[in-house]
Image: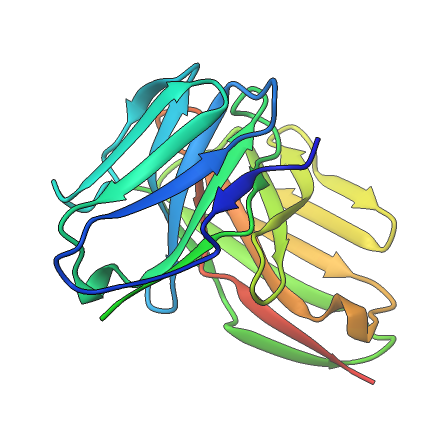
Length: 113
Length: 113
């Protein structure tokens, strides 16, 4: 398996635009997590899915953020409208059972200007 | 809510010495604790998991201890090498027992040749 695949690697967008980040988890993993990493706040859990169902989205900062997992091999994190304070590295991770190791993607570096 | 503290933002040590990183947590008793390594521009990579009933775990030059009384985990790298330079993160599951991971802010280790 190629590991967790995220796209794009880098995204620069203007304030107010919609941004969509994509993730392909490792095949066979039932859990998918979205994290955001900044210097100030470190790695923050935004939302996680189990078998494509959102379980806990309490980390999603506000209604501008939404996440979907239409099938076991694809998830999106959308920000609409984007703001400069959303600038961060967004990571997707997957895990076999939620109790063992999480495998992270390479991340998407988002810059909102 | 749980609080995870990694005491040092940065740690510099001489090559060949043992590096010791600390992770403290409050407010609950996690069933396990994980350590990850993160290199610049990359996602975290899993290193070790230790369960609450295990006092110590080893993997090659790595050793992790878990003191549930002190609410502390120590992460040791023996015979450190410049290639060990990275940021090391500890992670704990949610205090409700849910299948998600919360991360400390990390310790940036630099091994000086």
